[in-house]
Image 1 (cartoon, helix red, strand yellow):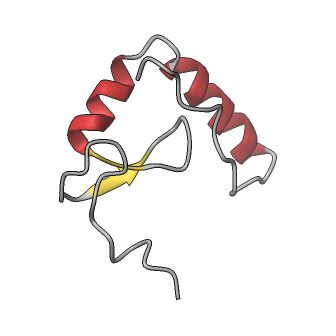
Image 2 (cartoon, one colour; image 1 turned 90 degrees about the vertical axis):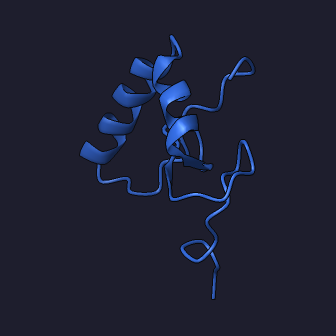
Amino acid sequence: MDNFFNDSICSRCGKSAPFTMSLFNLDKICVECQDKEKQHPDYPKAVTAELAELKKGNRNFKGIGKPKDL
């Protein structure tokens, strides 16, 4: 069984914290990293792509890719 839901380590900063999913990729991120992500200029593009894939029924969208400067 996958430890995905049992592991509470942020994929980006390594902090042990409750997490959510990145909209850029499949990283599990903490709230602080999510706040940084939301400030990135490509965030609206990631949101739009995610919603388009959900409307098509794709529940396994891997995101548009994490920007190098994030």
